[in-house]
Image 1 (tube, rainbow, N blue to C red):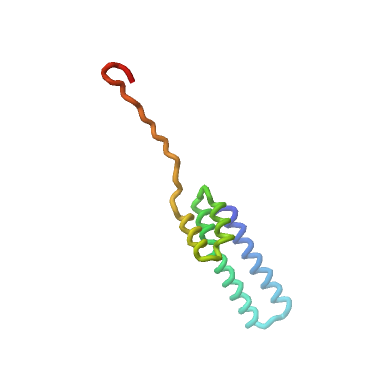
Image 2: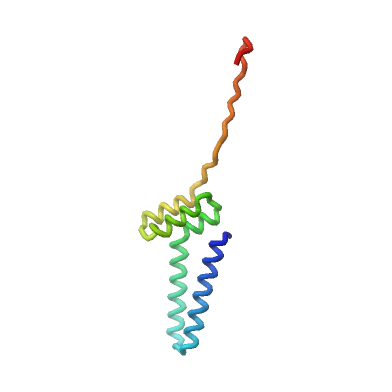
Length: 111
């Protein structure tokens, strides 16, 4: 996993933990606490799905993961931008190919 994925997971864990402590200190009912936990889990799940193209690019060590993340962040809210980021994240990286052509000398000894 990349550092960005770790930071994202730590952020979600801290957000869940701090809200649970705040709910416990205010004396909210069990129903309200469970509803708040469900909302937080839902928001975390939606964020995970929303940023899945970026996470896939990071996990696949794409050379343009930052560009995919920026596209996902700013245009992911449109379905078209999210699909483009997802396709870009799973597409194979093109590697530079070097082709060496050696000329054979002809019968006269010239190249």
